[in-house]
Image (tube, rainbow, N blue to C red; front, side, top):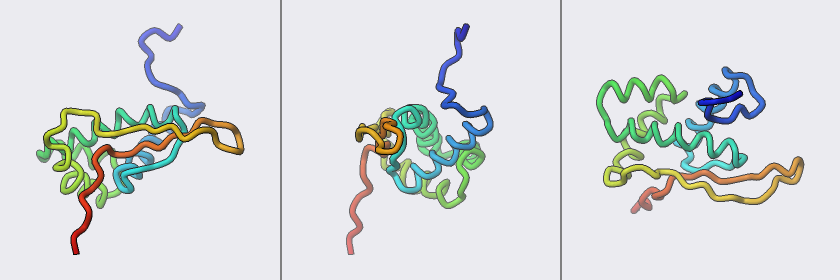
Length: 124
């Protein structure tokens, strides 16, 4: 029985799954939009939103917690300096999942997961 066991296994070992989530969240925060399968998008959504909430907190402990999960220092800096201030007035719901259809090779359902509010356009 699987009582109180939430989350998807995605056909991977625990260490592989955690490493994949860390890589995907790092890519999502770096590029602000990634294409992946529906199941993976639904799983990384909660982790990404927790990282943005850490960024909104902005204290030293939150910075260290985010740095322990996110793989690149430049992405941690981007999270605290540009992404988190964008959502200072929003109480959750920082990501959006848009279904794309099926992948040609294996008919897996694809989705785009992206950050909700786009970055302000650069004025030059």
